[in-house]
Length: 165
Image (cartoon, rainbow, N blue to C red; front, top):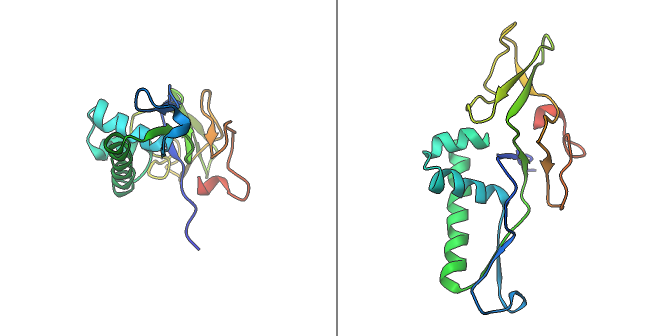
């Protein structure tokens, strides 16, 4: 059984849900679906001009995982443009990043905030108070966990513990 997929950190919800060739009704077009985290990977590398390693840190994934995400995103966008398909943006496994993330020490219970975009990951951080292992704590302001549905939710999905996030 494969390991559960770790949600990716995304800065904002997409502003638009569809792009399509001009003059053809959407219902008559084939659709290519781009996930929200794929759109975020394009934003970070192609608009913000970050190196893949830095973009991966912002999305809180490994560099090889980021490479797979952006490779698939570029393939989908190219397919939509070249073959005249509609491009829909929806779904994925992600959470929205607020201005800060709340970290908690699993040993002493100390909590603190880290600004988004610093590249500090809970799995690699240590408690500034006792040096213990760290985890993310709940949902901070402006963050919501997302799945395939239209609305976000706080906390881990059913059957997933805090450490699996």
